[in-house]
Structure formats: structure tokens, C-alpha cells
Image 1 (tube, rainbow, N blue to C red):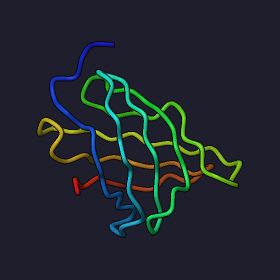
Image 2 (image 1 turned 30 degrees about the vertical axis):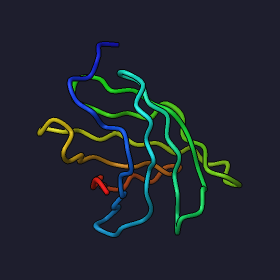
Image 3 (image 1 turned 135 degrees about the vertical axis):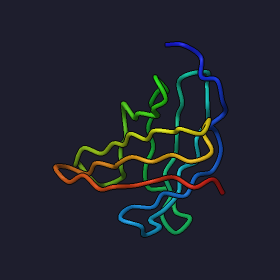
Amino acid sequence: LKETPFEFGGKWWLYENDIRSGYFQIVQEGARFTFNYYLFNVHVGSGSGYFQDGYLISDKFIMKDNPETFGFSFYSEDQGKTWLGQTYAGQQTSPAYLVKN
């Protein structure tokens, strides 16, 4: 994986269907990243992913006490200031975006 030209680590609020639903705490490691996911300041999920061709894509996303498959993909056209995309929960896909804290 090639190195990303910009930083995407930190705290990002997740909005699904225009409703704020929680936040990701992302630790960037070159083009790869790990993350923790929080709802109401409670740690409920974690995972990892990678940056490629303008996209942040999760390759693992595990929610506590929930066996469903979770994931996301977000695209940035402005060097990582805003991220637009979608989240996945089981068979359901929701339009989503990230806002830097």
C-alpha cells in the first residue's frame, strides 16, 4: 500500500443518515489504521483498515456483543478534511460521513 499524502488520525464523529451516532478514534500507521468506536463515550467496537486511492476502508470492524458484520468506506476529495461514504451493518448500508472533532 502506498503512503497516504495526508493525515487522518484522531477523533472523528460519525453521522449516519445525517444523525450523529458516535465517534471513531483512529490511529494512523502510514496507509493502514486501527480504530476504536464509541457510543455515548462508551467503547463498543474496534477494528482496522487501510487508505487506498482516496478511500478509507475498514477490513475488520467488531462490535461488542454483536455477531453481525460491520464495516465502512469513506472517500475524501479535499485531502482528508471531510470524508463521505457509507457504513455497513449486516445487510444494511447507510449513507454516512465523518466530521473531525
